[in-house]
Image (cartoon, rainbow, N blue to C red; front, side, top):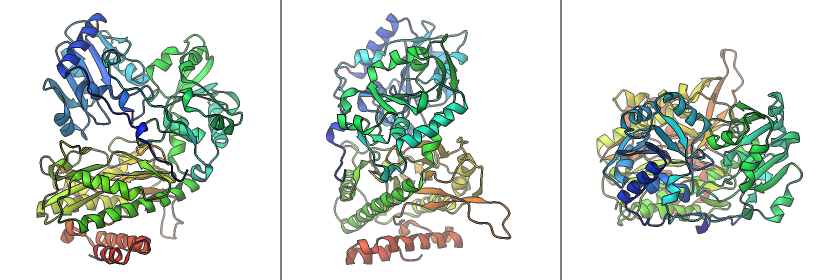
Length: 606
């Protein structure tokens, strides 16, 4: 396992399509007419409803060329629209492959209102039931009751995507308990107790990350996320039946599980659903609508409740926490090596792709490094204003004097998953950019040193990171933080630090802390550390309520040259100086003499 790496086979690239953008839309409308549907929904989703998907499932990209991680395209007989959230508004305009594609905000009301105005023929909205959740389709039905009908159709994009790549088959492997910290049988027993308390006969799991966590299994089905594409049904006596492509299984893997876990061919999942009887627990927020459709209404009673794994895996156990700290030490060293390399090569003509490739090479030096946790974002100058920018040969910029460089990256290690963002200056940076950087930094520090009463959610904390930006009439169009998995997804719920998230923050959860600011055609700033939520400390005589607090996991220098000291208060200066002192202590023995001198200089007190 020490040399386990993502292989090139695990990445699927979309081939050049035989059809032009206009031909794709024309052909799609022809199929829509045959099916008598006035609008067709094309989400960025696969049949497992996870955030990250294989490229051969990226139907949204095929029709629009938009490569972001969230979006919905709707095609009617006269119009085509792409709905994206605030992270992707600039990116969507840049990437769209047809001037007729309108870009709008990804909000329910906006989507519903647009549909009501743009369906001109046929009163049916077509959709693939495997690519939309139970709740999503129910919301559409409730909104359009008496106006339009929802019609299930075989996926129309798949009928047109003639050069669609085939998915490669990668073997599943078992994750040792020295990394997971808990046996699969222990997890199943806990879940079985929850199931029995609710008097459910079965739990249906449709999220690959949940199933991978339960069984302590991992795979390379999705780029950068080591989960196994699968469905599962938990029945009596803690038994779990996992449905996967059978070619991914080895005899040794199957034999390594005792009687609790059984593997079945994924092609039999639908038949198995049809035979179920009794009370069935499923998560209607994540479960594909097709799954509910396959359950017999006469023989089953459906309990719609959150996937019980989501909260359990979000609270890391002692072993996972210790391993996460190990992963972050390795990742921090890779980032420090990158910053030193940039310093030594600043007189060369460096590009965004140069930085991405160099950071990748530094990470590969670490033991138990498996691959990136997402495609590295490296945006210099105006590219940094594209929140989820991805450099390519066409957009790749050479760094220029005065640029801000936003580097957002992460690694997958057997010990854990990392995510870090640093914004650094290249050459002499002007006052406005430095001011924006300092305002963002103040928000990041405010979250880092925060204490709060038990019972609060990320919604209660989010505004604290934005306060200093708000005072300057500035803000950012993304959440302040997201949950992070243990050698699983870099984006993990249910917790988040955002304006809408109401999940209680609990000890053992890991969240990112990443406020930012983006000025179109100019620059982007984001500063990110991962944080661990800690148990309340013992109260003193003067303290009346227990409070939770954060422990910082990420250690990598901030760019002191970008900080305007006069905008900081004393506690913020103390936080920065202490943070940099901790970095020196953690890494000075791992660096060569010249590197140590450089690290001491950039981490000296301000």
